[in-house]
Length: 507
Figure (spheres, rainbow, N blue to C red):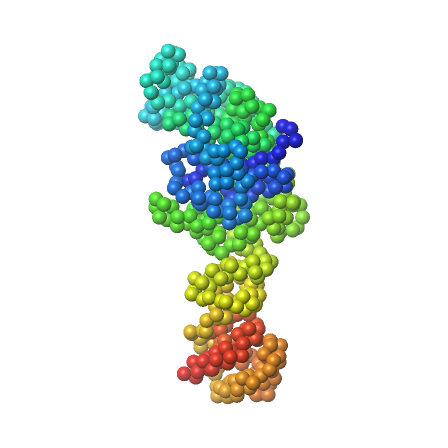
């Protein structure tokens, strides 16, 4: 293939349900390859199997890609010069190619009914339609030409199957795996055109890639067994010179490394495997996604990139632009990548710390609004965020870690205080509250110095009076540095909370 051709890659999902993180990683690698070569990334919806089509799934895919920042250059939504970008809207294009394959001797009409095929499956262990039995089944290889024409003219249902050659080797160069070879005798005669006139994936992907001038075809390694069919179709249709370069990505594996990661594994082990929430319109079952759990798109993408790829250094945190600058196919591993949810959380924690407060602000505002809290003062909001962001694994953790900055405690962890409470502690707080009402300047360091001097003067121990002060302000034994809390809350709010907290302790 000429190196002068503009790189064009595609992601071609079926609109059948939630978008698995393996699918998003396929998008990501396609996207990064395109951007690193100044090329184009295309989204094509493969909806030829109408029996599996799920309403809302295409819109869900678009929303996921937008959240991830992986928007295509061409798609059903955006359009482009090579549309339509839904296979169902390209239906009229496929039949002619299938019939051309029949005329050239590379495919055949098969008239076997579903009942006849079911009978074969019941009587023949591991039945597959292939060179081993096609000459005993109802197809244009065993029926004379006149009868075939009569059957087609009468409207008899049929499919078109590829006629796989016997004892040949199909080889191609995979950009990750090197030379890959297949014995054609081991591959069954795949259906190319279904009885409803829709192409199967095998025919449609070749025709569409050719007509859309796709230069590189990247997909998961589970599609490797189909590769010989596709390579032969490129050859049989006379398009070998235009065949894209192939790369088959390694699987994302279960945490124990045994088998491909599935939704069932996520349900069992307590983590999402979909990019975003997916609600099945038929069952109403809601499956949680990474977005709704509190993952940042930057962290999600960063985590996915390092599942099977690295840049050869110790660097782990990459922005999308950095990934595009450094991405090369040769750094993708052949081996499967084990999914580690703890590592995924680490990426999210690190990205929360890395992003500016202004970038995180919209997440926090939505979270506060969900708790019926509206903050007009952005400076205050960002100051709170600076104090607690090191403690956040997920964005939703902000409420648990910082709610007391916006709402006074309704309850206090009195068990942590009252067992060791005495009159000396009561006297200390009753005396320091009036002093704080006149204290200046109301800043962290000065407050801490003043408070500790007051404890020293009282003859009490520091540890005995720090915890009650914290519980008065936040309600429990948590939160950032207590004098940072007091400084940010301000004089009036701090003193009001101290009075309320002391009353609760003494009640």
